[in-house]
Length: 451
Ligand code: PFF
Image 1 (cartoon, rainbow, N blue to C red):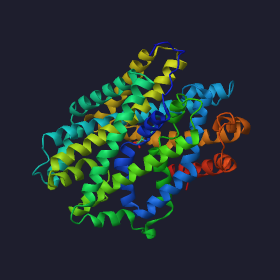
Image 2 (cartoon, rainbow, N blue to C red):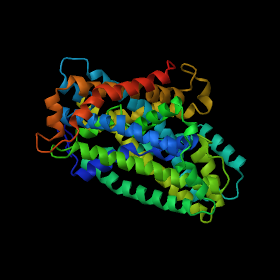
Image 3 (cartoon, protein in one colour):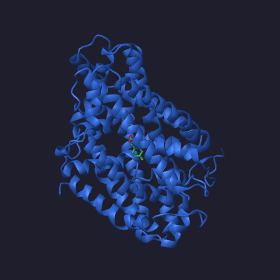
């Protein structure tokens, strides 16, 4: 690929678009957070609400992001500028870029942890350890001054290598290989987990609806998780949308990405909970579930070393394809808006993010006393991005396409200039104008404690 600022690459095929977007959506959010939240919030009942949130809000916003990106033809900020010149609509785009920097800073740290655990699994070092020892091992690792930083730097380096190769030869090629690998690995793990003696209880735990646990908070949790899991609200899909060819079908692409993301989340639940139940481990152990509880599960399983390696490989791959999309949001912005060569833009973006990320890593240990609004740097950036920037960004994206964009332009973009028949256009536009913004406002007000 040429390094010129003006030249834009495109994904080569619709499959490439789907794999890259699904790669962005499927990440630590699905494989760790979704099973844990589903387990804690009533299993099947939570899953039903999560699916409802995706259909009601997530789908419309994903379509809206693709529309902005492909019609605007630029990065998250540039696309808004192209579609609404001389207005302040570039602000949601810039918020998205800031959110991407914030998320990737701590996401890279957690992704680095997956490398350490892959390494530990390959050394078979979980074998014969007590749950307490595994817990102490995790705590001392994340508090270590340079060991997690080493893995984080390696992870960020690999993310850069993917992005450096460009859109078609980098993002598209790698995700097209990695996503099927991820799918196969999680499927094998789910089958292994379900067929463990006593695993059936874990399946019931996820699929047996217990509506008594559902309250307003649970509904909001499901909505918020749907949002984060689908990579919505910060322009990742806008940026990828700008690389989508004019003859690809944006609505079917969105649906396929959403189905893949959801299937992987459910498979992750099936891979984790039956094993957790089979070995009598606490299902709601939260942040520790993946890094403390699962090594404990693996070391008790026949062939545990192999399952451990497979699982952490899967987690690392899922994190990588999500990180690639986060870095691409920032890179595309820096290269196009600040007029830099792509290579320079990658270097600058990744350096800034990595430096902030190192502080996030250190905030687990030595720098924990450094506080912003009472939170350490890691938690502050997580809260800032997830609780504020994403919901507000998503709401503004929805409002932009619902109200600011002309109805004919939206129809034109979705139908590829009238070539495709669009069903339920009125419903989609109604969702963008009213339902999605109202629902997100509800989530946001809950997050800041107004509801
Ligand atoms: N969707 C990713 C996950 O579930 O882990 C996280 C994420 C990636 C959020 C990219 C936002 C984004 F732009």
